[in-house]
Length: 90
Image (cartoon, rainbow, N blue to C red; front, side):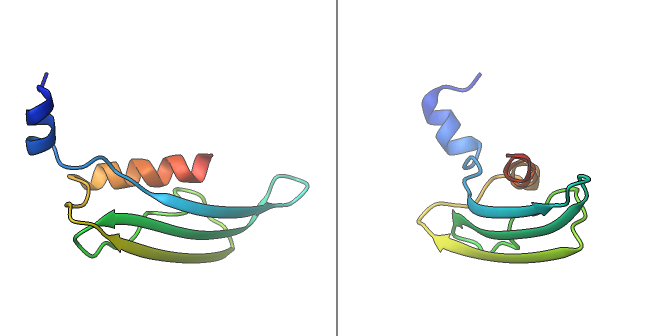
């Protein structure tokens, strides 16, 4: 376990993200459309969150905007992926 100081110095930032998502589904449950406007904070240019995560929508629109803050981006790509998974599933 890390103490509070070590947590902030050694592990990097937790993934932060915001997203406005709209999804379309047919009456039979078929995925039809996915629209997302997402953003994430950090210093580095990112490729955006993996949205939609694992699902194949025939019609997709995605806009991603980074927000510069004086802090580094998430420490690992896996964290970015988990944020994309969470946002797709909610």
